[in-house]
Image (cartoon, rainbow, N blue to C red; front, side, top):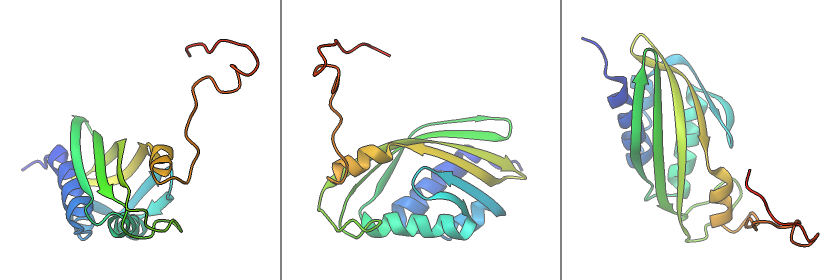
Length: 153
């Protein structure tokens, strides 16, 4: 029977990130699994599980929402949202009590019914802004001071 990789992607989000069951990584991912993330960088399977634990400890009420999931051949693409309250230390940032939301996209390569590699892009800067450790963006900053009109990209 073929494995439904869209269901596997949902399980990884809901069970690992939503419930803290990081052992689901072992069930759904190849032993040689590699992950690429803008914050944690390149990770092997053990490091990916540790990253999940880190986010769960920082946001114990972390709630993932799968916004969309698409599969084509050996690739699964997920669009997700995570919401949680910053109640634990995160990468040296003391708990703020701030309710935060971040969205992202994962692109997963599949082989023999298991994830073998994942590339994740998410709004890490937006999360850091919500935690008050990164400056807020100001549209047209610098241009207005120089007397120029902001323009669309």
